[in-house]
Image (cartoon, rainbow, N blue to C red; front, side, top):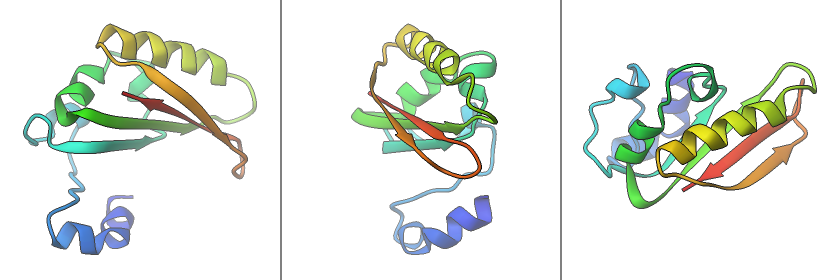
Length: 115
């Protein structure tokens, strides 16, 4: 996935507008407020164990947006994940502004847009 993201964003990586780090999320060596957008897709860390939201807050600029997207196997479980996301985001002082849904294969995708 890192190679694919790097290829797709080669021009942005080359001009310094994008970074595709290969490290644990909370170990990313980026300065505070380094990003206006953070995108995570199928990163269970956001709802499976300790909260990564303090790191999200640190890495985003004050008006930045985090897109936390996932595709659960099967139709069940989206509401539960959204509840856990909202609770952990709220504990870090962030709010889920809206939730986007998409009919993707093989299962429906959901994206929590957070500030």
